[in-house]
Image 1 (cartoon, rainbow, N blue to C red):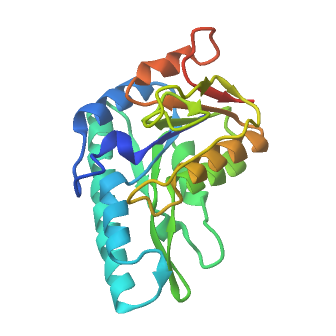
Image 2 (image 1 turned 60 degrees about the vertical axis):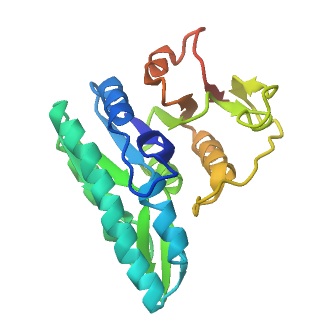
Image 3 (image 1 turned 45 degrees about the horizontal axis):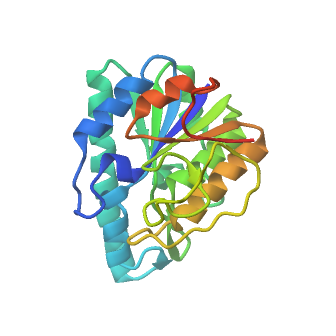
Length: 242
């Protein structure tokens, strides 16, 4: 089994509210079809913009409850876009939201496991959920760590909009060096606008956690999803966590 995370920046235009990137989403899905897997995706402009607008995560209030409604509907729409493409590609995909997996104490992934056993591809997405008197957000990166711990997959593949882990922000520093095999080097991260789930540092820590669990973990540029074919080969372009 492998688990794959598609970053929200790959399937949405994060600068435009609810702008879906169908072309890139379809290219990724065509590349990952074949072997059975569990798919996780982020929210991009379907999740972060509305969450920030309504103060999520935050204490229960009229505003945050309304915001959770908006975010949940937006994320369900994005999930449906992806699943529709997967079905067109012949993949039996089933969507899951953390909202429905939360049992008041922890996330119960038994329904996910059941659908996987039946031959479906579970598609789990980051979403808002209610925890007592608080509206929280469970990110796709948190979900990756959860399912890595529970399912013990052979590999965890994170698709983002960068080639791999760099020693500085490659979007701002052309001289930033990519680290092909990450083994604890010190990395500098800067804030990400409209990211309510912790920015790149949170994503990076989730990758480290997956590797610490014992899962082979990779960060690859999802704009070039064919690079997944080279995992384990000398020509692999991305970052492997060792």
